[in-house]
Length: 262
Image 1 (cartoon, rainbow, N blue to C red):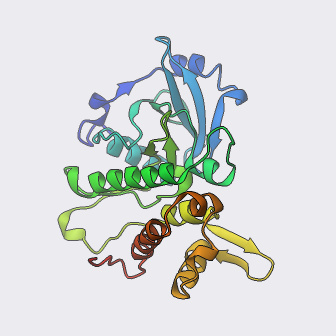
Image 2 (cartoon, helix red, strand yellow; image 1 turned 30 degrees about the vertical axis):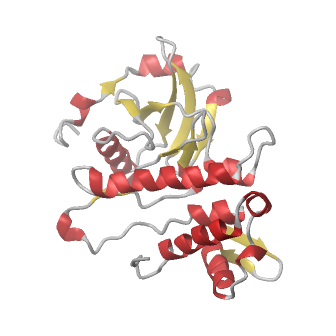
């Protein structure tokens, strides 16, 4: 890591004691979420700052590579719609990453387990789409070397106190040089989730497991979009606007990777 653009020099290195104290000895009540890469805890530093601390699972080579990858990428980028890396800890058996704390959880939670006090309105959904697009535009063209996230999904999009989106989880991301244009990013399905309120894999009695993408595209082809749009979206949005967003989503899902021009 010291040879990867001086990453450690750019990043605050926390002690294991600091982070142990911040998480109350990694108390299970402090868990914010768990995934394939590890567990994220809510912590409070000695200066009173609230942070999120990702504790990796027992290290295998592939997981160590993802940890280093995320550390290298996030230490070199800065954008309001990308979660900010505050530092790391290298003293423990498994490495730890420390991020800014984003208080309103994941977009996945708000789409699929909505809270009445914090409704995901049509206006908020459009803003979230805009925020994610801004983050991707920055990664693809404004950073010194283009970066492809490769795992954009609703569980990797965090919402701050104003419901502005921040893209997280860069473990599988890749920096791509100009001569590697044959490599493409993961299809962005988030817009379809926001439009329909459905999960990425739908389980139905008649169809069994079916991907949200194929289901959405089939309804678009039959011009039956409004049969599958989320009720709140249908109630709050203008049909012309909803159709415009749906057509944009269809272009993003183009399987040959080309988006085309309007």
